Length: 205
Image (cartoon, rainbow, N blue to C red; front, side, top):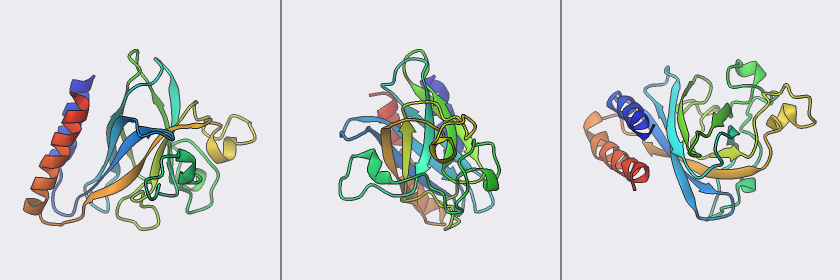
């Protein structure tokens, strides 16, 4: 599975051209400095969807977890995921599944991720609502959060289904930091190389 993720990552990065944006989030266990993964967000241009790839390790086998962008960045070394505030929801809509349109989900609603038999989540998804260019919908300088339970997509009938998907406590999170903003491909190359090297080190310690 790690090999598959490497292929996905390389495929995403080789498509980076003029004006592409990439952001990264280093994931840590809630309220600790224990690192358990990395997530990359890549948007080729302002009219393209955002490609999200990554790996999160150290989970219970075959568990399902809500995965959301929350409104606030963790500041000044803060490690408590609760400090990320509510779901990123600039249009004040109800919570919904990732497949819903903008009027029926939060911008930050990215559905569920499933840990495999080894407790590893391999992330590979594309979303047309989160953004790195559009200021209103940009996930940069916000926090990606992994929850303890499955996101019910707003359809579970629980008191918090329409706000959090009844996804339970926040078990891990990381600030989404914009990695590059240059429009020149040559000036991006060193940053791309460094990002790939760092990511490979996390995959193959």
